[in-house]
Length: 80
Image 1 (cartoon, helix red, strand yellow):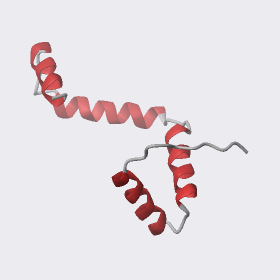
Image 2: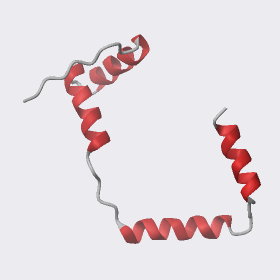
Image 3: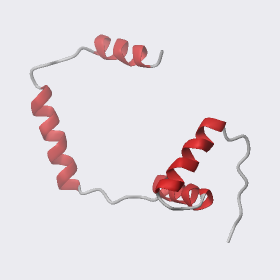
Image 4: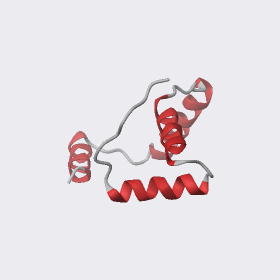
């Protein structure tokens, strides 16, 4: 099994990891492994469910068109 050393973890992030590990009754190491697994594991997508969600969203937003200019402005604002 491989060993990885993570350096320069911000104190706030470490404290949050520590708290979550305690809540889940795991060591910090085990909690980090779970975080990595949950992030990199591929998840099967239910295509029918995804399409239905997209159709519902399309129905909900059909009466609210947005121009490319409005979209780009909102996107730029969100990055500030």
